[in-house]
Length: 331
Image (cartoon, rainbow, N blue to C red; front, top):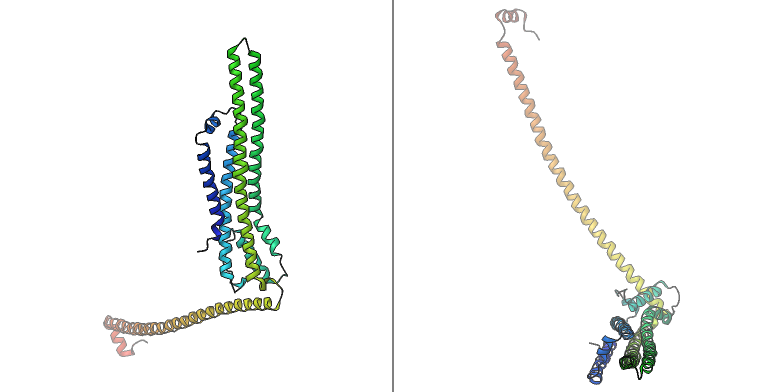
């Protein structure tokens, strides 16, 4: 497996681990966190809060740049020797995926040449802005450290002024002023230390790592375009032939779809014809049965009519029978 896409993430982890090990080896016996907890100016709290925010943003950016590098490596392996036509499904939520999809669309439609560098810079600009924001946070931490230095020196001067005023007549006030001056010295020292280390060293190096990762993605994508996609990007006979091949392939797919639809229609019509013949045969059988029932019904009616006439003749009175003998039966 290619390890290049993970280079930015590995550098970020190595630098973070080095910073943690260095801190514990240099400041393990110090009282940095004791001062942070007791800092009345709260500038150190602000410095640490901004550092944590920038650290989280830098890590998220590193993950996103690593995913972009993976997409770029996948595209480089898929288009090798075949060009943009083999690009099928790429994640549109990734900048590299959107870049190659738009590049393929432009080359297939033939809307003229495309500025690949400007398009790729536009897609990767959001990562550039986030990396620049992290660098700005690092500079802001340095500035806050300097502000803490000024605040600490102000506290020192205030404490020394109070001590000098209480010198010789109020030892308690003098000691309070000295303690205030020492706290001011701690504020001046520790805010400068935290601002310089967290902002000037750690965050700025993290920003450089992500910036390097973004540039690596840019270089990898441009290399893919120049080496494997040059024939698709430049207006030439080879590009026209590639476009024609792509259109022929698309037409062939449409023809296959139509043939499949025709075959399904033919099968459907054949099944319909068979069902119609079956229905006709069933209808003929039902008609024969119905005619037979009608014939039997007529025969039954004729027999009932004969029985009725016979019963009527049997039930006649003697004078009607005599009349029928003499004059003949009534029609």
